[in-house]
Image 1 (cartoon, rainbow, N blue to C red):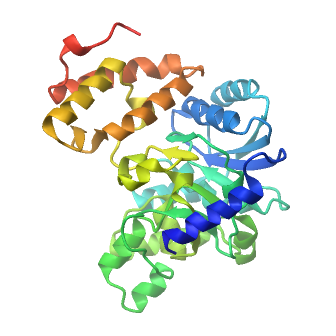
Image 2 (cartoon, rainbow, N blue to C red; image 1 turned 90 degrees about the horizontal axis):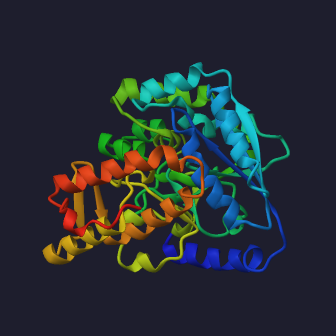
Length: 362
């Protein structure tokens, strides 16, 4: 749908569910694997502080996180008065490991949200999903959580908001009807971006979706077309355009934003695209100034940090806010030194390591 739809819908939702409203309950979930569970503290703190009068039930899905790491996170959540941590340990992990192998992506836990309806309470009709490690919540999410779903499986933002929308059915049917391999490849990268979504649990239950649903699609995509995919790509291959579009402020991928969109007031800032994850890159005030000076002197839009990542002037405030939030969490002591070292190294590789511009140690 055109952007006028999302602007109008969000204005309506803000009037109904935003502003000076009564306290509410928000059901929010994430899914995580790997060794950075403690980085989740930053998103949780931002979520809690953005909803000070609400009760947030936070559903943490995982496959095999260790008890010590989970206990550490539970202790942190105990310091957030309005957030209740609920653990969802999915023990039958074989299918998720298969999806990881078929898609060529690490961490089978990334696919857990696809079957959230099988593990959440039956009376819970919808849940808000947020990426665990590269999201910062900056505004009220209740208008988004209560967005009309119109019978669709998810409410989400488009993966490519500045390209014409891709309207498609399930990929296997589309391919059988003559859709090109290039079109299926584009679908496999995701019609929607899964960083922030509202999942229609009722619809998923009615449709009987299961891990086997996605294994069948994943096997076809890998064996038939040799495709790689993550969770949003697999969802799109399985369901096509079965989503209702959300306003981009609920999944604001600032690094990709146009000049017009820099005026948006984001509710979710997402470190997505060809940008360093926030816990990897911590810039001092002096390094920020070096970046800005370089961009002004060269007229360039961005500083290329490496072949895969860059940074723009507009990005700097979002990194700063993430680290200001992180500084109030226990994980800061672990990740700040390595993030400082990474920033110093990649800037020096671009000729921006002149220590005359560096501030005093922070």
